[in-house]
Amino acid sequence: QVQLAESGGGLVQPGGSLRLSCAASGSIFRINYMGWYRQAPGKQREWVAGITSAGTTTYVDSVKGRFTISRDNAKNPVHLQMNSLSPEDTAVYYCYADIQSVGSPNGMGYWGKGTLVTVSS
Image (cartoon, rainbow, N blue to C red; front, top):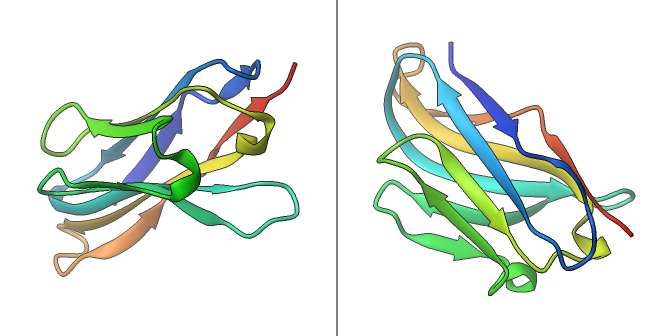
């Protein structure tokens, strides 16, 4: 019923920028939280950034000052502006959201399928 779709991944040179987007579709009542996670090769998936329904944003220390999470309106879409990218940022980036919907009125978590970000010269 609810689906998340990421976009914007690709190949970028070190120091470059990339903008990821995540859109939630379905009969949505409320998006309580949306965030970005990433999983680099050989590593555990880690939380990167999040934004609450009130617009409060948080970031993992490693991306503070470089990444910005935002949204165009109260719900969709959510973006992750990534600047000053380094090879260490290479990972599959996943969108996550806690959403109340017709199918799950009490809310549940949803994951996107991921979009690959490769930072390489």
